[in-house]
Picture 1 (tube, rainbow, N blue to C red):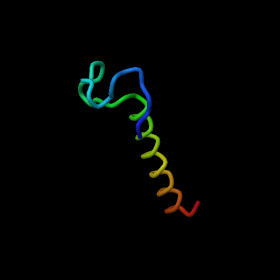
Picture 2: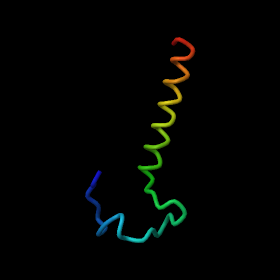
Picture 3: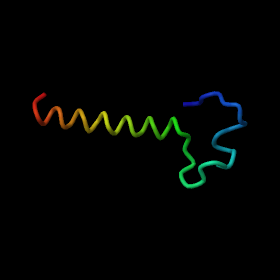
Picture 4: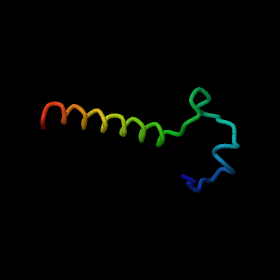
Length: 49
């Protein structure tokens, strides 16, 4: 997943705004969406929906 960015490199550049996690907002939202989708599929399958 090498997305073009205005910075030199997201891995080489030190995290400035988010030093605790070091992840961009789109990555966090993508991870949250994936977790919610997996939980919804598991619950739906368990309930037979």
